Length: 196
Image (cartoon, rainbow, N blue to C red; front, side, top):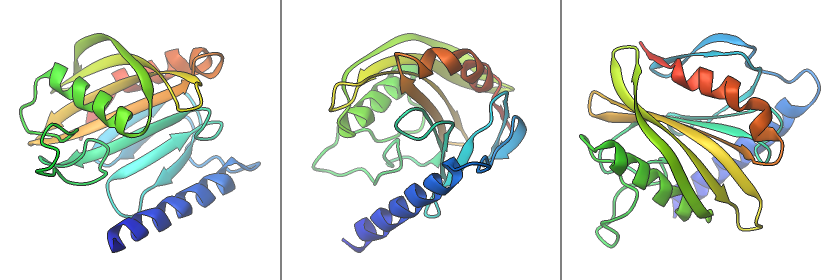
């Protein structure tokens, strides 16, 4: 229970920090190259960049998390939830837990299961494909989903296993305007991920 309270307090801090970043002059990550955990990203967009103080997770946004967000998870260990929300439980052996050596379709499926855990519905995926990130093998795919209020989102995922741990980048934005506005720039950034 104390872990859940600490996680909730950290989430509230992230929300308050994001609100501060969204104000005028609050851009934290300008366009260009940046190191994030064990990755190097090159972005043509400017983002508000929020770090989770409890683990290797960052959330980036341009217009606010409800309008677009890039979730970056690094070093997801075997047995850990793919969104770093806990460890595998015997009561739910088929949950979205990462295992070393997973096939691309298995990684896609645990990402979808994790989105369902976050109350996303009508999730469809498209164009699962291999992707090299420098010399590290990984994957990319696109998705469409809706939140509990019926707002339709589109997004894209990049993932790679390195040294037995998973790095995952997931970007989503409402399908009506924000997705189309930034999809090409975000795809270029995710295709260009390099590991250090």
